[in-house]
Image 1: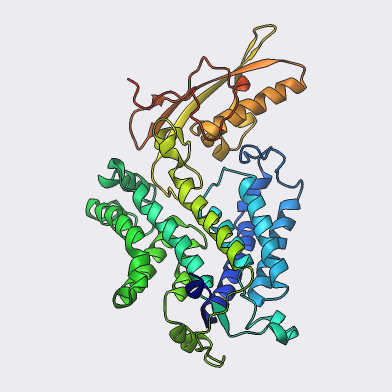
Image 2: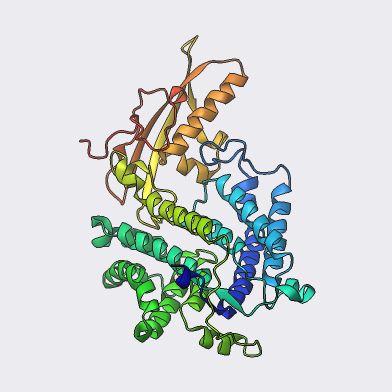
Length: 437
C-alpha cells in the first residue's frame, strides 16, 4: 500500500487543478454577492435555519455577509495564486463550512462537496510549483507529488457519483415522473423549453443519468474509453449547467479529469516549460501510518453517511431523515401546506401563525415540507412567545405532496412540537407513515 500511495509522479495535474479550483471558488464567492444570493438567503431572513445543533451559527448583521463573502473570494484568489496557500485554503474551508451550516434554505449537495474538496486541498502539496509561495521560497519548489494526491480525489468522486446513481434507481425516477416534473419547470426556457417536455428525452435523461453517474469514473480510469468518457462529461455537465444552474460544480467536475490522464499528457498540454518528473521514486514519510489511519477513517465515514437512512424507519423521500450529506441529488419534487397553531398553556388562547410574518417565501416552503425545518420553526415560535412571558405549545398540521401525487398528512397535528427533542439518527414518531390511507 505504501509503495502505491507514496510513489511519486509528476505534479502538473495538481498544480493546474489548484489554479482552476481557486478561480472557481473566487467566482462562486463574488457571484453569490452580485447575483443577489447573499442578500436573499442570508440577509433578508429574520433568522436562518441552521443545521440542528448549530444554533449559534447565524449570519453577520448589517452588511457583514457581504464582507464575509468578499473575504472568502480573496482567500480563493490566494489559493489560485498559491500565496500563503495553507492559510488561504484552511481559511476558505472554515468560512465556506460556516456559510453552509448556517442555512438550509439553499441546501445543495454541491456546497457540501466543496467543503470536502477544500479540506482535501488543505492537505495537498499544491503550492510547490507555479505559485507565489514557491517563487518566494524556492526550497519548497517541487515537480513531483505522491500518488495519493490524485487518488484521494478519484475515490471521493467515485463515492459521490456511485451513490448519486444508486439513489436514482427507484420507481418515480425510472418511469420519468421526476424528470418530467423537473423539466416542466423549464418550460419557459427560450428555444429549448418545449423540447425539454419530450417524453423520449425524459427517458434518455433518466436512464442516461443513472448510467453516467454509475460508470463515468470507471470509464475515465480505463484508457480505451477515456476519450469518449471525456466527451460525455463535457456534454453532461454543460447540459446541467445550462438547464439547472448548479453553480461551479459542472466545471469543477470537468477539472477533475486532469487526474485521470497520464501525467505526461497533462504536462504537455498545460505546463510544457515545467521540468517533467519521471523518476518513479517511492518516498514513504515517517507519518505514513497515522496518515493511512486518518485517510481510512475519513473514507469509511464517507461510505457510511449515505447509508444511514436505511437504518431509520420509513422512506427517506418522505421523512427526509438521512437525506442530507448523502448525494441524493434532484431526486424528487416535494411541496407542502402547513398550518401552525400556538396554544397558550395557561389561558388556552389559540393563535394561528402567518408564516410570512416570520419567514421568506423560500423558508416558508421549507417550513411546510421538511420535517427538521418544521421542528426548528416550532422551537423558534416557542422562544418568541417565551420572550413575551407566555408558555406555549406548538401544533403543526402539515400535508405534503411528493412527485405530483395527492397531498398526504406528514405531521401528527396533536403532538406539541415545542416539547419534542430532535434525534439525529432516529425516526421522529410525530412524522406519520408515508403509506397511510
